[in-house]
Image (tube, rainbow, N blue to C red):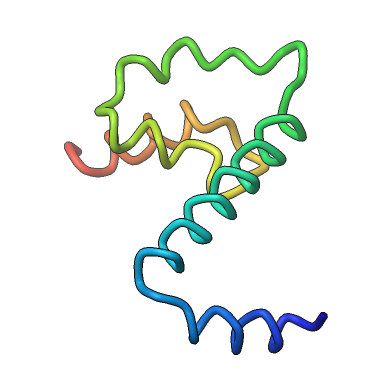
Length: 80
């Protein structure tokens, strides 16, 4: 089955069924992403200080730079 076949089949489903599929896909992606990012030196304790909506975004966009330093850079630029 191709991606286009899946999209065509999904378009025939109800909105509720498509939402259930979307949630399942997102959970699957999140699980795969979190297991791929696990490393002994990945300390995300600082993440608890962020707003809950921002916490969900951490790790969504991969970066070679430390997320905490990206946030510090953002704050420094914003308030300087």
